[in-house]
Image (tube, rainbow, N blue to C red; front, side, top):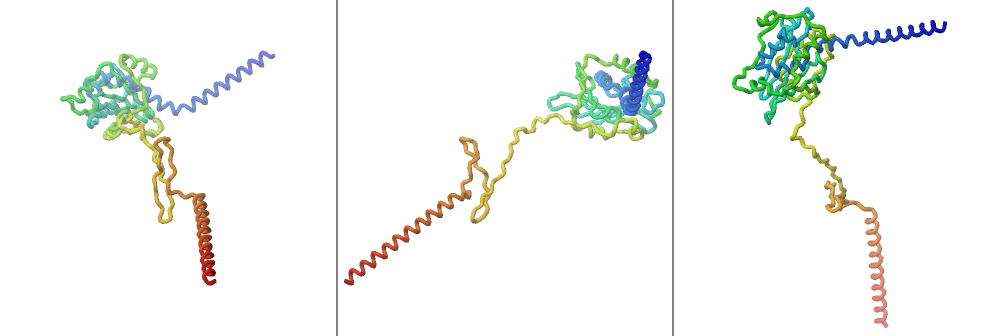
Length: 327
C-alpha cells in the first residue's frame, strides 16, 4: 500500500513539472519568432564570403549561390528562399554595403549592413552589422582577415564603380533559381563548412564608423518590420558608440569659485590666493575681523583719556602761575 502511494506521488510530481515546462514554452513562443529569423543568415558566413569576393557584384552572387546556400531566409513565407540584393552608399573613406531581402513588388527588408572604413593611418576596418529588427540591437561582427580582401583594394582603386543591384521582384539573374529553406539545425551544419576558419570573427557592441548610419539611410528599407511588427524585435536602433578620440583632453581642471569681499565703498570680487610653499589657500587681506576692530576702539579711547589728562594738567599750571604774579 505504501509503495502504491509513493508511486502515485511521483507520478503527480512528474505531471506538475511537465505542466510548468509547457507553460514556459508557451511564454517564450513569441520571442522565438525573431530569433528564428536571425538564425537563417549567419553573419560570420557573410563576412567570410565578403573577404573572398572580387567586387560587390561577385559578393551578391555568392550570397545567392544555390550551391553555397549562405542564405536561408524566407521572410515572405512563400516556401522559397528570398533573393538578397546588394546596394552601396559611399562618402570619402567610408563605404556602406546594405543587404536587402526582396519580398515582393516594391517590398524590401534590410537584413544586414557592412561598414568598410579607412582611417588616417591607412588601416581598413570592416564590420558586419545585423539589422536591429532581425538581430536585435548592437549585433556586430568585426572580421580580421588573414589576407587583405581584394574588395578593399577595389574600393580605393582606379577601377572602382558604385554598385546598386539592378534585380528586383520577378527579375533575377539567369544563374539564380530559388530553393526551399533548410531546417535551422541543417542550415547551421551546412553553412559552417563555407566559413573560412583562418579568419577571426570578433563579436562586439561598438560600431566603429560614425558616418555609416547616416549613409545607410539613403537606401534603407524596412517594409517587413513595418507590416509585421509582431514577428521582429522591438523597435530600436543600433547605438553608434564611437571610437575613442585621441585629441580629447582628459586633464580637465576644476574651477574654484571667486570669494566676495565686502568693503565700505563697493563689493569687490577677488580670486583666492594660493601659497607657493604649502599649496594651501591663503586668507584674503581685506577681510573683516571683529577682534581687530574692538582692539582698535580700546586703544583710541585710552589715547583720548591721556590727552585729556595732559590738557587738564596744563590748565592747572597756568592758573597757579597767574595767582603767583598777582601776589
